[in-house]
Image (cartoon, rainbow, N blue to C red; front, side):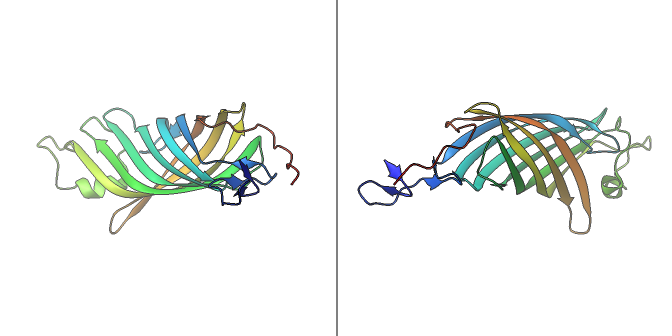
Length: 201
């Protein structure tokens, strides 16, 4: 048994210790996301999934995929791998900051309207005979920066409102794509909704 970072026999534990003195073991989370984003000229629907590995009370590795609607004939997908940094270890509300890197794929065809200048400049010279843009797909490097909070509803379940800004980059240009919404996160390991009391030594 792990008490204050050590097994009763004296060896170090792999567990962390929360702010309230309770043991915190590494855990896994799975979350679904619904919200909105601005991948083109307007605001459209967004959805996604995230898989996280809570290594310590203040450090989580996370992989995330997001599908972004961009109106008729257009769409985008982002895949990021990064970290979440819970700013507090107490519950039921745990604010966090997040950062990640990955790839952003945007697709536009002849039916697309409101194509951002970020892509128009790269599509010049690739017009069809009718003067319309040909269908094009762009894969770009992206950095995601954001924040939000885990609001624990039960020992395994939390609502997670969050905002992420995707910085989509080329060698000479950068475009910000805001994504915001609500995740429903399932924690496979049990998390007390309220902090437990420190056990006596």
